[in-house]
Image (tube, rainbow, N blue to C red; front, top):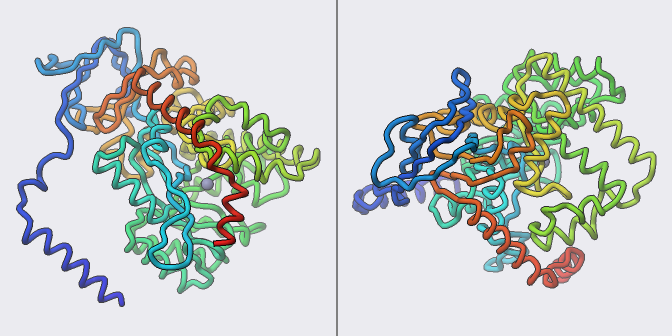
Length: 474
Ligand SMILES: [Zn+2]
């Protein structure tokens, strides 16, 4: 079977290289527009030169061509006097909506389709130009291709395939299963592996060891099996913890000392952290009242199916009681301690939101996460680095994005005010460059109002509970 696919692949590939003329393939997919932004303050986020005041930056096609050089004649000029330019933002922990779910006989497609543009607009409208999809499936590869082809304006998407001990797309119950799933995920085109909570210890270790052999980085949860022996999970090549919550799941004492112990473990192993403070903060709010979801300013942009799910089937609100609420509050507080301890220990932290879980809206939530990170003790600059340069470094795309430098891809956000003075200024978006494409404030507002309109018209057609019962009867 495997050989058959290999032959098929070879056949397809050689038909490309031998029969098709090279000319059209080499043509750039986009028209090479030239833009110049003048009088702008650039916060480059590069390690050595941070701010270039009152500068001119020229963008050609998808790339940054020059900084403080003459403006080419054919350039479209944007006067940005008093404004601030930062690198495009990176959300390192998202779950994107994609077509599904599937039913069991051939030729029958998914029950629900999502408009990729409407969905991806939420990111670009918020200046989010790269996202890390942490439970990737084939449909996400399709979405990414739509963006790369230029059919959809959206962020760059890094894809991690999730492997768990049970009930996952990829399930591994033994070390040899684990190794096989890593090779399979790599073969299918996923660039990263995400390990999950139900893996047993030996399978988890085998997955990470195989990932190292296959040169594929690993992000994830700390499996529940390690509770009491957390340090055992910190094996070489375990690169990134997906939530601060992973540590609160490993302990029953929520002290500064415990946070420091975890920070030292991570530091010693070279493992970075996505604190993902939003997660528990929003869970605690939802446990109190669903008004916290309904009243979100961005709720109207959430696809109606998810609006319905977040309100009518909210697992955090259901059966909520004071004891549970106070437990969530304890975790919120402990996660702040985790951020402080990791900062003290010098472990790099990356901004990630878990967008897609209830109450956490794609794109919009990254600004909330930045605010929470600064409330927890990061400086505004550190918070910005966590959502730009550092994310790019972990994903190993820092030669192309993450900072504003000549030759890098033009992913940038123009802001009305300086985010180094107040991190909430990342919300004051005047325009966004995504892969060299310029979206000004009007365009962004139009994109958002289109989504709002669509959601209102189609509200009635999407009911989470009905969908579940219909699926059962199909
Ligand atoms: Zn997640």
